[in-house]
Image 1: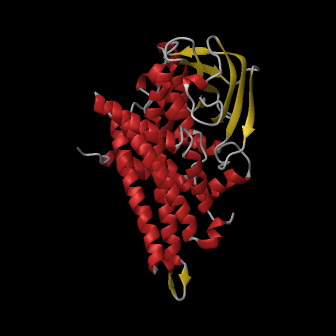
Image 2: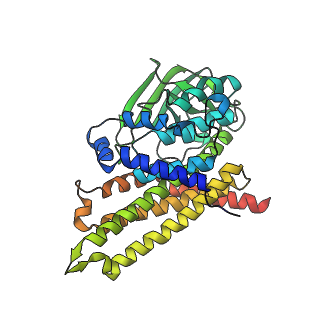
Image 3: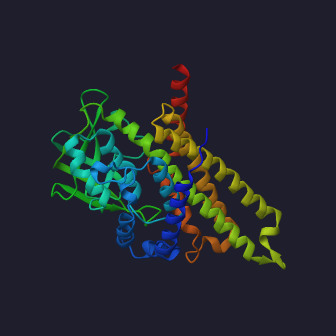
Length: 371
């Protein structure tokens, strides 16, 4: 079985990397941290003009109708660039939820606008620290939604949210589409370790809503949405891991100590080698996740959790060792090491922590073996 990308997909990678090098340099990322803006609107406009937000949306809804392999390539490059964009919230989660569970009318309403970037979507699930479950949900749904979700990625700029609410039937949860420009919806900014990706506390007070999918089938739908998003998040993390390794390598080759590059010292070589090993393992698991996602394979729950756990570990390790390779200066604001460390920490909990995905992996393997 060949997991490698095709020649056309690698050409897409070259195009995406060149575009992001031109329009999303480390200077642009730094500006996102320093100017307090919730995202880079100019970059978002350029990305939507490139058609990236429409990658997997069918042509009948004004999308490109490409595969999840192409979207994985784009996610990889966005992660490498540490792009300050709501791409994951709108594309991996909101778009995917409507593709999977939307009615014909809902798809006709939202997918063309998501494809063009006219609207931005997000996904609102958590309500408190710790793992979310149907029993922990307090937000009510139906024709109106009431409750508070925190933290919600990119809610400050999103036009609508897919909200997970409790239900008295079925699996204990339902999904609702809620437009966020209502007077019955209030947002309050939440500070995170990565200011280039805004997060908010969102309170709904009998906000008008529309049921997405079946009432009482929301928890199974949520798990499926997360499983489908996990490989794409993992690709972002894999891209960031490789960029952090390259940053560390370039610095080690150019930094001299006692008349020789620090890259020639065994301690630095070991750091870089360990980063490379973890990155390679994570990327291998990302290929597995992309294949399972693209083919809608029965192994998707296992592949999603495997790719997610490996990518979380690799990105955090690479971002941390990148700072260590730079020495004391790597910890300062003036150096760019911080961008990958911040993003690694943020992505490690964005759709569930490493521990939660480890639990999912164990459960998925047990179910697979029992089948």
